[in-house]
Amino acid sequence: MPMNDAPAPTREWFRADAYRRDCSAVVTAVVGQGVVLDQTVFYPVGGGQAGDAGVLVLADGRELPIVDTRKGKDADGRPTGGIVHVVAADAQTLLTGLQVGDAVSARID
Image (cartoon, rainbow, N blue to C red):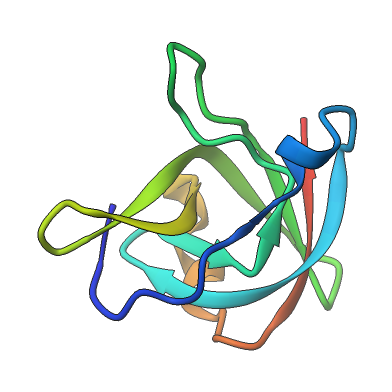
């Protein structure tokens, strides 16, 4: 997923603790059909392994379904260090309400 102004790299909790299932996070970008967080437990697709799926729990308790996770890329296709949490097609309305700085809880299935 291309990103124009790349936010800081996402902290990768899945590398530090493979058994961790959730973490608190802050939205650093909303790109296309996805969300970039400052930290995540979601493993992005790569090395033959599928990207994780789960939910982002919003401050008001609503759940934004995540169907895939991918490494962020800039407009030229270079890695940004961000991880894009791809939102389910039927949840785009919730996505449009997210803003940079919003707090969420990231939880994998």
